[in-house]
Image 1 (cartoon, rainbow, N blue to C red):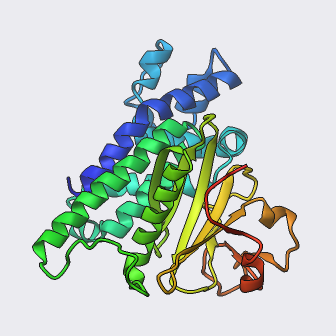
Image 2 (cartoon, rainbow, N blue to C red):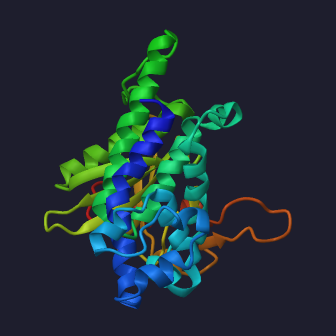
Length: 316
């Protein structure tokens, strides 16, 4: 499966849930006239000419494709979806651009730009949107990303004998940076399994290839984890788009692999909201010339981590 196929498969996975979500939200606003007011009157003529003027609920929503769904959300954002979705408006615009790129990929320049980084970003954005609508669908996107991207990675490795799959053994004193994220992922998976957590899923986030985990405890309660792995104590930065400090079930886990002795630290996301700002900090990067994405960080790292060292996972 090539990169275009992966993205298009993701769009096919989310379409049934997305159209039903949009239809239900718009029906709440005006049960009789929702199609005319919020769809036909808001979308461009080039889009609406292919849509029915009336019909049953199922007939109407079944005529919507991904691009139409995204345009409906955009056109009704400030009045409706801003308050319902509670996600970044930029996600919707980004997905619209991605859909335009993948609708017909005969353009050579666009084709060259659709690489692994592009696909990872696209699937991350789809995940973040669907996580606000249906967590089961977002988990399917997670699985698609892990399965298909890993398959493509393995194909690349087979073409180049110098790139071999290596096992992460604790006999080494220091891991190459490229292997750290995968070691941390496996280490945390083992810890979660040992502590009795179920439905453990993970996917890569950001350019540094950190990991985001979801899991359930024995009582079925959902938990989310933002994982960063380093060789030594080094300032961790958590992208705001994946780290929602309003969530009580979200935790930051920091693994330090140093001298054959991995150490693990766990900090609740809510600490960034409740603790002193000089320790758990937020960088907005909104000054002229600053282009970095907003992120959370930690001051006095060595002293702060002493209070959050753990040997096993036990979320409250």
